[in-house]
Amino acid sequence: MTADQGGWNRDYRALRPRTLAWQLVLLLAIEAVLFQRYDAEQARFHWSTHFLDALAFTSLVLLAWLSIAGRPGPRYPLLTLLAFHVYAIVPDLMFSEGSAHSQWQNVFLGHIAEHYLPGGAVAWLAIALVLSGTYVAALTVWLRGRWADTPNDLRGPLRSGSDPATAGNRRRWSFVPVP
Figure 1: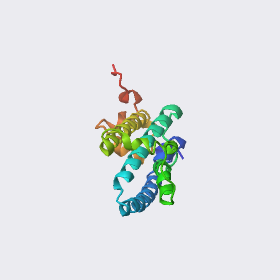
Figure 2: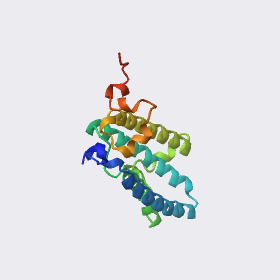
Figure 3: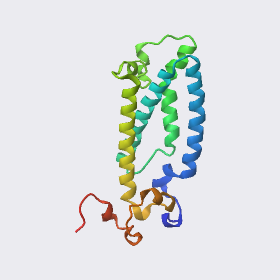
Figure 4: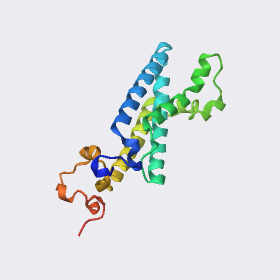
């Protein structure tokens, strides 16, 4: 199956709508449980700090993957976010079992140091939004540069009001003016 017939080649695997949908459901369910656990300890600030740290790191990983591999990835981006968030909270899980926090736990995405960032959760929110926005912008440019190869179900968000007959013209999407 070709991309024009609705098929998905390897470059678009990470963007399959069904795959993203079940990942989102799983992410929200597990994050709700984690948030409730932090809320019971009156530590919502810690949940948000670690989540935003994981989101920022995931955005960097996805941006690096897009830049180096030349395609979106890894295959399960929202599960990657979940994995980094769980990795970032491992010291808190250890703490709930009686292990004290210490500096060596910074190997878990800066678990201790991230709480000392000036601005706290607001600063982490700004960092996460900037990095996530940068990834979305890079992904959009990547998709627009491959308009002719883009599966039909991804074309909707990329419409630019251009004539559909010229949609396959890759030069139309470049930043260089077309003569």
